[in-house]
Length: 388
Image 1 (cartoon, rainbow, N blue to C red):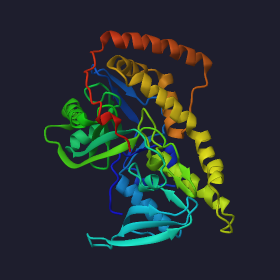
Image 2 (image 1 turned 180 degrees about the vertical axis):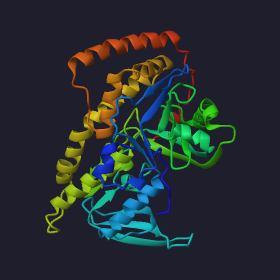
Image 3 (image 1 turned 60 degrees about the vertical axis):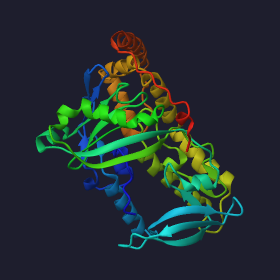
Image 4 (image 1 turned 135 degrees about the vertical axis):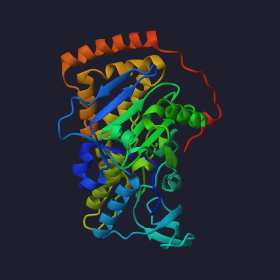
């Protein structure tokens, strides 16, 4: 349980209240963002935020420990272990989890196993639970991040500011970032279509933000991890339900996963507990699908669809990326974007402003293509076919 999940660490405002997170869990309250285009144009974002609105930046090792400790206080039994295999003779269970158990202060674990009637698989992108139930594969991105200690005067610049960089030099299909943490910054990038070149893209974002990091940045930690690109084909099999990255609940365009991992875990648990009727019965696969899956997809399906479309439109070439940054100068775009992110509801119900946005988008695309440099070509036909 001392494992630190590699993560950008951004959470929406609604999560703080919804999951009763204490103020000291949030390291930084970001109220300003700077969008930087391939040509270097910078657009400041955040002027539509209200005084009490912000994006929370945190360290996963801090938040995860807090949530684990709280779960134990509520009656959960913690086990410090690494799942090796999930076995069952029937998809309806019971299920035997074989794992390596670790005692505090002991680096070498011992084999152990336990039997369960129901499993909620929250074991990440490389989920062994998903493999056990043949949940199907998904395409994935590789995200790479360095945690970097910088001088205090440089850190002051990132007091309540995060940066997003776009351009085929830092990613051919995503964005690069500089996110403020407790006493350092996280600098990273990600890609799906050209994963073998992730180190080159990381070097490029380091170069683009080098002046802001100062002359002597010190890398504290290097992190790399896969990010699901879409939901798994099967998220409930028998009495096994997948949540979070294991289910593929990461949004396109933003790469956000923390909130949806926590929300899906809570929704799955609440629905399953209700179906057990006080422990008097076991739910069926169809009942779990009709409650947990149906409610999750109805509530958040539109968000995933919209962000998928935005990524395909604006992250595909430098012209589109220039247009994306240009559009971010609009107050309407900023308000709709932040409201959608902070409160997890697709916004934009002003027909007149939506029509204006359409024409402004066309103008931004034309202008972006006129000034953008051509994207570099690459080819990795074998590696690009790999799935998790």
